Length: 359
Image (cartoon, rainbow, N blue to C red; front, side):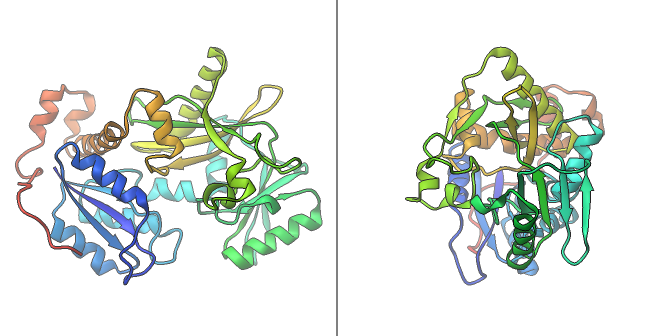
């Protein structure tokens, strides 16, 4: 296939992007796909032109924002829908659910999935509760966004004064509403999931906080994720969880239920906390989670027998299969691989010979 890897640039003049782009492109090329990278900061015309010039059979969508707007990935997915090109990951509606953590929690509540009680402090608009009076300590973070933006040790607050200071900090520095949720003390797990109609849960990853300084909160903030050489970065690492079969099955079921409830497509990751009494809380559902070669998601896939190139190409296959089921409703009833291959006509899979202009 001709596959375009779509990514965000820090500026229109910059030509540097996250290392995950090269990892994904190399994985796709290893299976003989013709791969082009299109990087855009905030120019809609350049994005459209990039898709037109590369003429992809599939867009591997790694666009996590657009311009300087952390909600821009919603608009990018909507644009890809309007263009009519198949793409990996969630559509605009599902991505919005991922971004609005308060709304996502309400859907989890409807589905009977346990989550921390919370309140949303909207900028200049008071607050909205979700589950009664909250018990301290609370964990305060931006309502939207990912990559632990606005999350550090100060996110854990123990009284109302600390709470309001942290809420105002998020309002001013992140320019977002603040989500305050009850802090769940316990073990932290990540469950990667791949698939659509019959999603499969990967081996469970546990975050080991044992290397943190004494008294440091067991949270994976921005420093722990990205600032090498800091006590937070050096004191945390991901490991394959060693769990009894019954507990593993329980965490898998909860994660799959949350994945389906929020309509995640192709691949994603569910973050959970397990209390000492055995209650498992869904902390967050990450649609189109970070796919770098050393990420927790890739680590889980490898533990489940999927090497990195196989994982990336499986995501591409899932997206294309989903698109063809949408275009050809007869496929929704289930078809063989040979029948599915027959649906991929010469019109939908173009000649991959030649190269596209660099953008």
